[in-house]
Length: 177
Image (cartoon, rainbow, N blue to C red; front, side, top):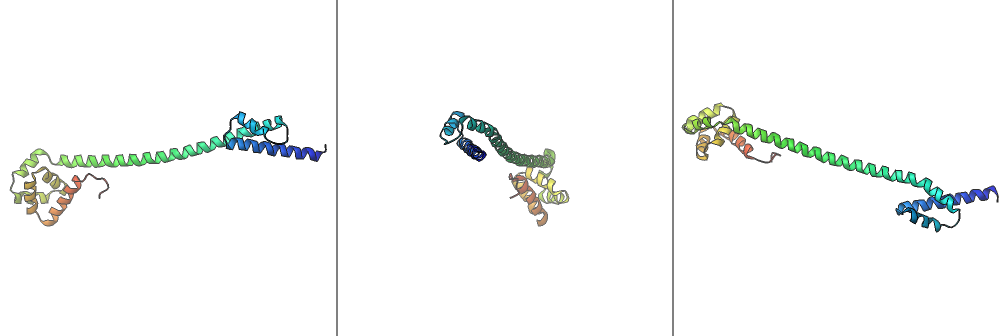
């Protein structure tokens, strides 16, 4: 045999082996099934084909594992993004709860009793002079009838501001809508 014949035979064996290994990997065949696929190939030495598949199989496995690792890292990034979003929402809710507690604490029981026993016009005059948040907290602790009488005695701008504060404190949604 001439050198060209050996060269052609080697190229055909290599191509056949590569195809057999590729088919085996694509179909995820077990080693025994891969040998059956090699047996069905036309020419070439059985030992050479087995050696070739053995040489190609490890890099193919490594590539497959690398793809799986990349996919897992992508999924992990998405999960981390969701965790961060949930943490931000949790922090927002905690801030809202803290704000709500502070609002409720501003109106102590004794101060509420003082305004409850005061005439509506006098209470309105004094509540207009204090911070809107404190006025709203105090009015929210009063009986609805007393709070309505005091609000009706206030000027309309202050009454509207205090009403907005009271409504916002009663709103349980966190998005402001």
